[in-house]
Image 1 (tube, rainbow, N blue to C red):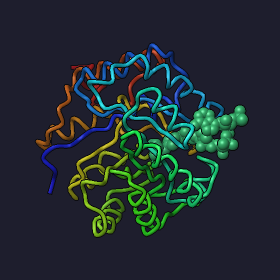
Image 2 (image 1 turned 120 degrees about the horizontal axis):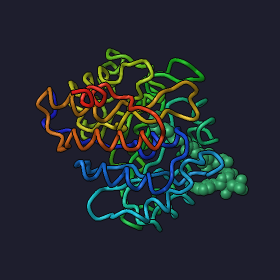
Image 3 (image 1 turned 180 degrees about the horizontal axis):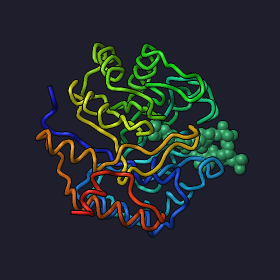
Image 4 (image 1 turned 60 degrees about the vertical axis):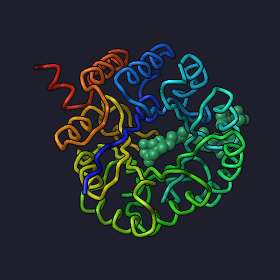
Amino acid sequence: AFPKHVRIVEVGARDGLQNEATVSTADKVALINALAGAGIKDIEAGAFVSPKWVPQMADSNAVINALDLSTVNLSALTPNLRGAEAAQQAGIKEFAIFTAASEAFCQKNINCSIDESIDRFKEVMAFAKTHNIRVRGYVSCVLGCPYQGEVDINEVLKVAQRLLQLGCYEISLGDTIGVGTAQKVDQLLELLLQHIDKSKLAVHFHDTYGQALTNIYSALNRGIATVDSAVAGLGGCPYAKGASGNVATEDVVYLLQGLGIEHGIDLERLAKAGWAICSALNKQPVSKVSLALKNT
Ligand code: HMG
Ligand code: MG
């Protein structure tokens, strides 16, 4: 059955902007404030990763310092202890650690094996615990990998369980390159839900093949109540060539509205936030809903 309420985790300022042309710190701050103003409560604000790997996120500290942390839940990627320390210093109360269900992708993305990534995360988790910070875990490539192709759903289960054992409060299932289809989503969730409570799972779908909304529908149907999305469909993945951005938040909100599922977001203000950041990027939103609203 569908959930009554869906929590949107807005990842446009991180997953989106990490793969767009660099925008100014002021534009990022304005984006996050506009998203909060539209009613979004959970916002991934940046990444404390190596600036050599992802230069677009190099100003995450400045971005977060310019924000009011009391009204929204701001999170940030923390790939290692160094990133965690920097995020904590900035005032972040939720970390996100990230690994993959594919060895090849893990190597390209964070330069280590899945096993090694789990070892790195142990330090991050211990640090988070002493500072009362909750930690979200991402598993990438749950429906396919740009390097190895098919990914075994049993691998997804294994990695998700390892992250939960480390102490993550939630696992976000990433279709990093957007190759999944609805039936595969259903099969994956059928397996995972035999072992993991639905309240601990989120879906994070990229829209490369235009399947993200259908895939989200499939997940909602299994009771999943947390959905990651990016305003205006920003972004892609620097380590997954050809992958397009996350599903657009505007499109997800419109879907939820149609299904009578609560979300707490003002669609018009959200769309405006999308147009503003797209104007800074000199492009149009990749959201059919946003384009349609503009023309009505
Ligand atoms: P490494 O090269 O294996 O490790 O990087 P290292 O410890 O040897 O560090 C290399 C350099 O980075 C050194 O600098 C370190 O000081 C520096 P140098 O000596 O060369 O000048 N460094 C750092 N700088 C800032 N902050 C840090 C940090 N750590 C080391 N925290 C590392 C390992 C993980 C750091 C690197 O591989 C990295 O930063 N990767 C980032 C990858 C990334 O951000 N990917 C995109 C996000 S994941 C994603 O998009 C998927 C997701 O959306 C879900 C989905 O769609 O599936 C989440
Ligand atoms: Mg992603």
